[in-house]
Length: 240
Image (cartoon, rainbow, N blue to C red; front, side):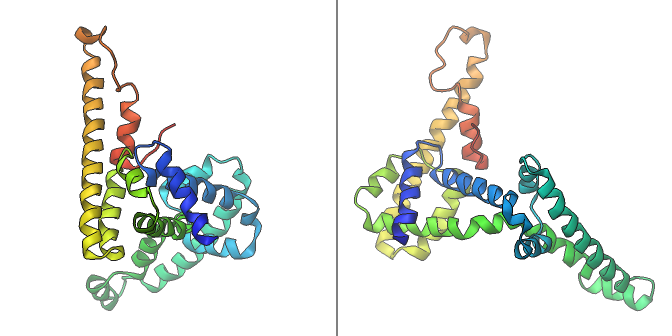
């Protein structure tokens, strides 16, 4: 049952025809995480403790802002900023550079104030909700590569991957496959990625040429939606 829970979304993503099946998987998880965060969960004490501690990355705080539940966001931000104010103020007071000893110490090591802010800037509640399932999807892709009949052909016939997820697949393959499997997988991965990246590159090139008045009566070929597809390839963004 658990295996099926993960193989079905992976299969669906590879059949969806997007420029990156992993971006398709990520986008669905991301929306589910946003819906969860803005749903009844924000009233639960345990969840509020986590959001107070972690906060949100730039991308996801903007998505939360554009959700329908601005009251829920305000409540989370209120308790999060209460905690940030309280803890940063305490750290700043203890880290006063007034004394020469304090000044020398600051030159030698990172200030607790800066460490606290760096931690805030590298944590995100929504990212944390997405990652475990996305990791499981990656495991599932390699499991299906080895065990599921027809999946290798489905992989080869896909429209490739964004650069970020190409790199992730490339890197993770060494952990998940033996030497013989790795050689075969990377050969297919490289061929699929570069062939489709070149295809989108050529579509963008024709999109540019089509803007030339000399080509105004020429066929658009496959370039009318070249820009959003190129955004997927280079920045892992699915534009609808």
